[in-house]
Image (tube, rainbow, N blue to C red; front, side, top):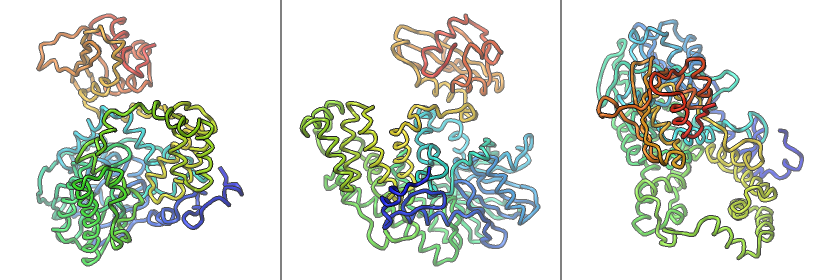
Length: 571
């Protein structure tokens, strides 16, 4: 989509500018893209880092006999790009893989061929594999949609709504190249601070908790290098819009662990490498102080009796931290840190008892609109607010109309225009992507109900996780009189698991620990079950071609049972 002359005249050029893809965004966020030029950087002898490929950096340590690779990106295609860069340095084989945490583990197959899993050391925190196989399974549908929103996957690749960067990296998935999952399970794990030698290199592992509970600082004492997921180079994401709950105290304590080792070189999973003892010390201090300040002042405000809304106005970074290069709000924002911390420490209730049992949002909208003088008056005032550049209020006010009439076209247009203006000025890539995704939904360009979970997303789930993914899809009306147990036998792992539906409730059951007799039993593979659960195949087709086999019970029983769950297509 091209920018029209009228749009160009309407752009606030004091804050925004047009980027190389035609994107209209905060000028600082666009300038931040310069950090993500694809390149390989020599940190010190035998240590290199690739930037500009995907969302995260990948690090090479030259060992005595081979390459030690730290993190493998978001897919095999990314890892292959990393490997091309590493081959400019050395032609040694891969001797070891290390995961800093579970997020960037999907490219490992580019380095570890099938059947060679035991010949290459693969190191991680002991929780990585369980996080890969069970993480957020109950909320997989919502978390994946919000993750796609956060990383701008619904936005166009060019034009005003394209994203400049994702603050931590240049992009999440390159759709032209595709993404093939290539996770390989670790064969060496640690749970506490430990030391080892990997391919002749002295390595220390220091557990951390930041945006995950399975992080490791990889400390190379002989080189003064710390590879970590602690310092991101931008303001951290506490109170994530996609829904993750994070304790800032854990992150702050992880920064203290990084400070203890006094690194000369800091290689973040995200952000530009920092070299020099003084430079590293300053960066650690500012990152620590920024997080500690916001946390402490949030707690102070809570103890003063402030509500979450009041706290957002109350907590402001001091000038020296606000201007720190590594605390710029290109990813997380102070306001969301405050809200997230309040929710983590206190819960949903603020300080106003009127919010304990409020009227419904529909009733609220009806009374607000009546108080304003009717629907037309609300629309008129929202348009005036937009004209006065009160974009946040315009979006908030017009939402009352949309609560009563979601398809009111003029109101949808007003809200979309207001949100687009907010998107153009925010320095946060995350906030911008959420604004613009909502804009595209309001404009009817994308569907808010599109299905996001594909079978390959579920490919690493455990049998129990498969059943928990299914469990929360149960329709209580369809199942209110049902009491049945389904048994699933997995032919690719020799595992078995059960799901009992009991008067509107589903419960995962194990036949090893419970004296429960299944009413019917099906046999399948993890891949085939994943395709059924993600609506990529109907039950009828799966039974016809043999992807699913009924070995106990009748076809009608299985069909009726699975028909009680959302998004399972039986015919």
